[in-house]
Length: 306
Ligand SMILES: NC(=O)c1ccc[n+]([C@@H]2O[C@H](COP(=O)([O-])OP(=O)(O)OC[C@H]3O[C@@H](n4cnc5c(N)ncnc54)[C@H](O)[C@@H]3O)[C@@H](O)[C@H]2O)c1
Image 1 (cartoon, rainbow, N blue to C red):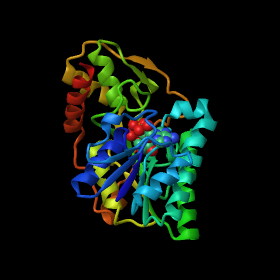
Image 2: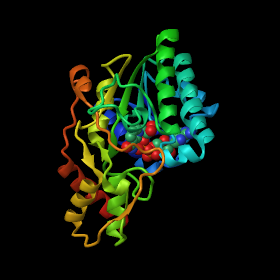
Image 3: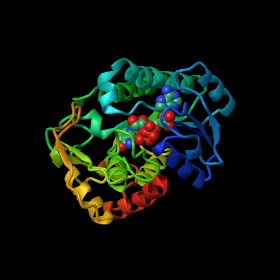
Image 4: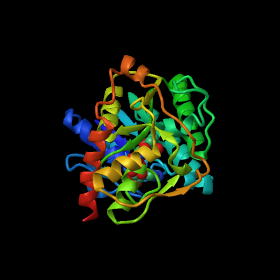
């Protein structure tokens, strides 16, 4: 039995599908603050519970999970700067509540969704390896890194196994086109409704994009591999936001130029990571090329717009 926190969200719902396809029993905990009930696969049991609440203990008692994939989070960079107490409440205190329940209910392993884009800050050199120091540029990066540290502590204190996966920018079906994160879905949503998108950093920022089903496969691999290790989960390739805009514009035949604005606070200028450690120890590599991934994402966004 695998318990997925945040399993009604964009990435978590794909993780739930990957575990079900690999014949694991799956339960989902999600308070639906950004997730959607209809994202949860029919074969997964669903608990509408906040990870910060006392009720989480009842979910653990009922489900008796062998493993926990912890994806529930406040994941909006700007919001973390505007309301750092809320960010820390969900991401740090909520995660401690998850870890305390893992120890109490003798969970074998926790797989944690961290963020490559937020934990490192502006990198000293590219591509970034897992040894690069954490100099987060926003509260969200600090809260993710804090949980990474708590995982190390729980491993030392209680022998709770973990794997931390630092995801690059994840894109694909079910990402919210009206959210703040997820440049691909946002650009698609805007262009489909005939609006000129804004490119922050004037389109120059370099990011690393990884397709959501590839990320779900990395989580699945981490169930039995990479104990007490941290991995970058990305394509290893840097792409400018302008390149993303151009690729989507070409697919849609969008006629307008973007609005160019300076970078928002908390965002780094250039980042992409080395996924070599994940290849070596998890046997994982990103399989879906960007051209293929954006076509699949666009099919979803078009249907969602109807
Ligand atoms: N999307 C990305 O590019 C990206 C990159 C790096 C890391 N991550 C991490 O991956 C995870 C999933 O992100 P996502 O993109 O799917 O975002 P998402 O917002 O779609 O998913 C987060 C889920 O957590 C749930 N949630 C939030 N607060 C909760 C709470 N207090 N109790 C219970 N459930 C709660 C939400 O309802 C949602 O379903 C997050 O931990 C995020 O930080 C995402």
